Length: 593
Image 1: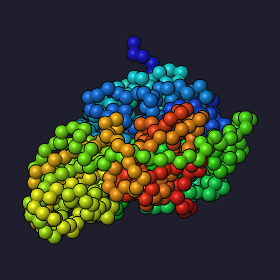
Image 2: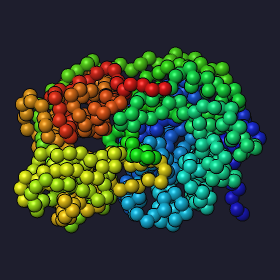
Image 3: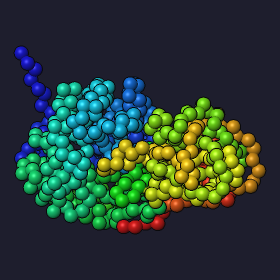
């Protein structure tokens, strides 16, 4: 006798949700576990409950959980999703799970693995068997450890999203149907939903019959809910991404939204009887090389901070929206009587003297033998998923001329002749040509290329990185390249030496030590420095750039330790100072509403 399908914990009525058969409104907030130090998950989840949320939402980044096609699933540290789900349940919170496979999220390549998008012929986010087979294999390994945390097994996950804003990308309904069947056949019994911008075209191509449609918007509540209702005459109205802030790009402003304005729209949503997922309740940080980028008319990489002007700040302190939203939620649902948590303590201001140095370009040749190619290989072809690549060859002739990169660069290239910097090429400016003076035949050409983040939205997901074609000097091709991948995931071999107090004028690693009595949150400021990366105690904080808007990097308390701590800075250009500063206040740049 066939098994009788289980009834999901969360179901729908003609105008709302039912949880275990009782009327239920989802009041959720987004918090991505992979953007928050795992030692701080419990704190952030508690603050979610105290604001009045009954649910939290998270994406699942495929590229981190399965970094290698045939490698094991990664489920530890920042990626211990089962632990995160258990902590949410312990706090009394339900969970909305958004496993993709595409997540956008201002995340590197929208969460799609580099090994997958390296195939130039694959049709991403379609029924292309090369894509769906890879997705199915991912679900084969991802879902078994998550099924015990589904509501059907007594866990906190009450709903699972199908794809993500697919209506803005494609119209392959067979692909969406395949995803639905893939989840169901692997044991997911919970309510499935789609999420699209609230306009007829996106809702038409991004939804699937029998799957709940939800909308994304940040304002014009009545109009957007009406669009959703026109598309879906019955069932719950839900804003699955209620945008209360925005993300920032390097060279742009820091986006903020007035707390009273956002709270008024939240009140309109709840007064209309709708459910909501606040995006973001807590944004967190794009640690390491995880930030994404946008490319509409030009390439625009996202900054390291994902503060998003959220209800909880990047360091987890309640901000103006936290208090305003708590008051609004209290008009529509019970809010815990416990007091709002106070801001966490901060480390006293500290100066760090960076008194050891190691030049980058000589070091680039030491971690491994170079890959020899006739023309420069892309980072994808080098098997490099993030970081930098150094390309080295020799000029045959001397003289003044034009150095031309026929395919351009992905994403930012610093050019050196015999070790001297001669210019920078940037993808965002569509740079491809540089005037140079070659002092002698046989002079060394070195090109250091930085992957600034994979495009996370639109048709350019998967654009290659590195040098993207042959290189010519005055029209003559330069052949015979040594390609050095530099993932910078292990700095233990960097040969630091004592340095004097003079400023650096070449790409170099800098190292210093500072003392901590009691670890606490802090913010790394690098006045006088130009552009690069920073690590504390081996933990990769992310990218800094004096272009702004962001001028400090968040340092979570758990990466510090009592006693001696070590700061390493990779400066790509020059610095007028040999010191860094740890401050008690973030600087995310000049604001724009």
